[in-house]
Image 1 (cartoon, helix red, strand yellow):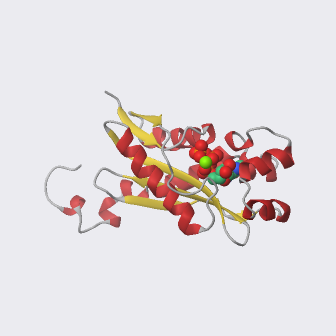
Image 2: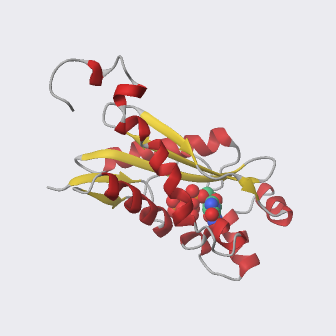
Length: 185
Ligand SMILES: O=P(O)(O)OP(=O)(O)OP(=O)(O)OC[C@H]1O[C@@H](n2cnc3c(O)ncnc32)[C@H](O)[C@@H]1O
Ligand SMILES: [Mg+2]
């Protein structure tokens, strides 16, 4: 069986970003999308809620896909100052969860007002842009940058950086498993 990497979303922008990075890092692996509950509101507010959603998606995705050796969780949020937040978590079978953040930039004030009053960012962006299901393609970032940075491309650096401790356990976890004698993992 092919090596498998689970990603806790079926959103095409998130799945494409995960494939672009992790199928490059592990050419022998395939990315398997799976819907899992984030455990946080559909529109997370603040760093803690956004990171909690990413972490839970990563852990549940890993558990849901038999034989997966990585679980990826991607969660978008907004902070109280009206910045878009993007958090990536990568879970490994030994129980570790590694987190890295993606771009954080100001959303337009009229969008912020509506989202902090309870609307979902995706729905507000669809309305202001006239593009249906924009969160699956351009995303807010793609709409606001006129496509200079799309949601798929935006996720890729966060995924690559969350992978660093997996690629370099000898640096991130020098007293851990990698430092013990015996065959390499
Ligand atoms: O199917 P899932 O994985 O849940 O994908 P999603 O598009 O809902 O993405 P998130 O749950 O991670 O994002 C939380 C909320 O923020 C919205 N959101 C986050 N980033 C966005 C972006 O770049 N463009 C549009 N909406 C975005 C999204 O629509 C959700 O309402
Ligand atoms: Mg969502």
